[in-house]
Image (cartoon, rainbow, N blue to C red; front, top):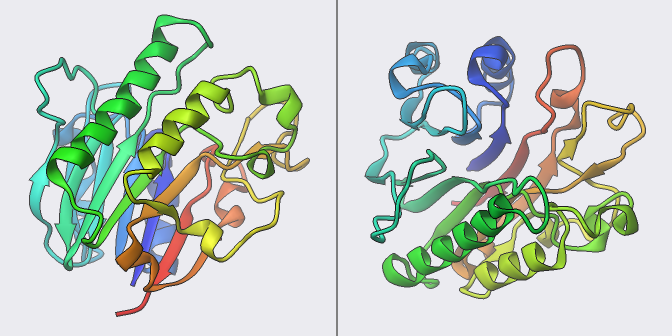
Length: 256
């Protein structure tokens, strides 16, 4: 079984590329972020024609998440339902083939010290509280998405240059660590310990050809699912060429 997470940076702009990738790779579950369309505008029929069930939670112009699955999803939830305002489409969860799959798009945070950065940290805390209330680390669970945090120095091409930014700030990394402390492990790092492996590269300053990137897209799994993890990779090829998203798909394989 393959579970994939991919920030497509607009499904309208990237539809043909994503469809071609799905045909070539045939993932069992594909979690998309930053779809940037309302639910009725998502190209549902195109993916259904390829044999996928489409579960979406979107909004116009910004944000938006989706789960595409070979088998029908159940227990779909589109909100934290914690009593706080939820103006942005960033959280979607469903059970697929016995695995609870969470597709999340964590706020970027814009600038350290800003209200948006505070919102990012608060959002990660809300996600942790959702796990505390509704989930069990003993279950099969995969939290997938653009988490907008690089966990360690080996996940950043130049840690000194990025340490005061929203993607690698100590407060953001601490919030991610607190999330993982619930009972999640980084599936990618079960198979790769080396540095220089990234999932996002800025469009500017030739960042991609220079491999000046960060690993901010993750699939975090509970221990029972980690025990079934047989491989992980980042598809750099999907980042190449004109019209590509600035993110690459992260692909994790599981037995059973």
